[in-house]
Length: 424
Image (cartoon, rainbow, N blue to C red; front, side, top):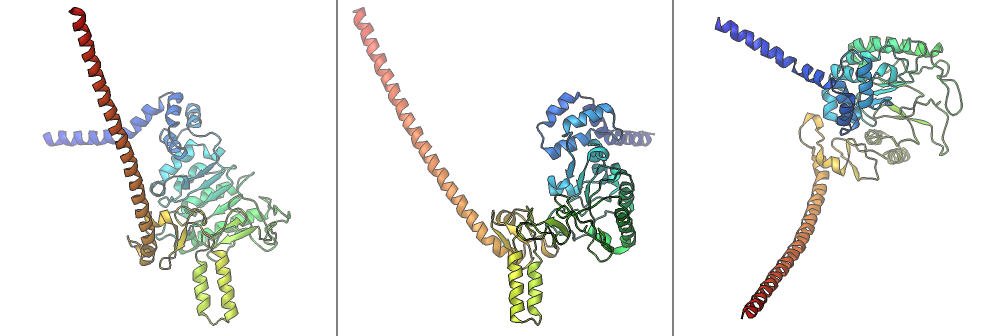
């Protein structure tokens, strides 16, 4: 009898614990919007977004929509999970993504979605986007600019969940979609056939005039005859003729005022970018150059390869995307990474799954750490000098205080003498 009672109590306690978060959320959501908005004012933009999502149920009411608009910028049309900490984005679930999309009314407001670093989702959380005629760009590559989409472990993002949602978008009349970036894993393995079938449907929608595409510079119709917006062969399925940054379309022959092609392909992140907007990262160029130099090339060809490599290696830090020139960025021969000084010291390259830096990174880090030690020592000297000055000033004030005390004693002595003289 006692055992049955204890078991019942445990079940009740577990049930209470499971519903605790929901109770707290309900209590918070009952607060006036003004109070919640004032709380949100102390949070940065990504944190405000998750705060609003935590207060949102799966049924949007007029009151909750007004509250969310007050907490989150109602004009927000871009959602890039690269704006939050990488470790946090990697822990987000489909439920988290779904809650965020619901709270910002994504189907009616969101124009750009980038799932940067969301490596733990299947794609089911994108359901709130179903049938959107507003969305213009969806980046499913799970990485940011100048970062390789070839992840060390296969992400769970699945054609089974995502492609039906994309179909519902491209089938709608008035579809605004201009750019799609896909996960690299869909081009291989068991999902490849399903993925290629969707690419066929997407290209067919473009070809039949579902979306009118013209070069922003010469107004030529795109894609050219017998070509496709997305290639239906090979492993690279990045979208042709489309700038990842501004979503403008450009043909392959138009150039800018510097005689550079309007679009260039970044072989690292597999995205096409307008060359005057950003400098492409070509980390793999050095590997290509080495391979070419080992082949039976003439001396002139080898020199050409060196020149091409030298021109292409204007790079960004792999970790923080800091542009070369603003911080010292160095290339590691062993793990083929580029890091600025700060990230080289604070990050581990984790080559071959190791938890330690490779030999090349340690050699590059040594001078940086030595420089940091010198900097700290200099700062310590400055602090000691400042503390010494402060101590001297304190000693001076003590002397002044002692002098004032002595002056007060002298005055008190004279006053006593005067008082005794008057009494006499």
